[in-house]
Length: 73
Image (cartoon, rainbow, N blue to C red; front, side, top):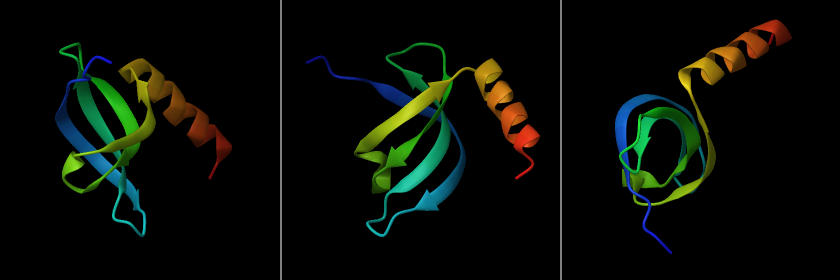
């Protein structure tokens, strides 16, 4: 299996932390040298391991923001 390379360009923020110390984070990440995208996933301390997550373009992130605002939470 090919190694996945990533570079965290910007840490936007942390949403929560599990009892085991993993953080659910929103970051701007470049995957395999490509254009950075917004990424929401769980990370182990020091970012040595990651959980499954979702990757969004800026336009998709704005659409998600609008949907959440419409929910009125």
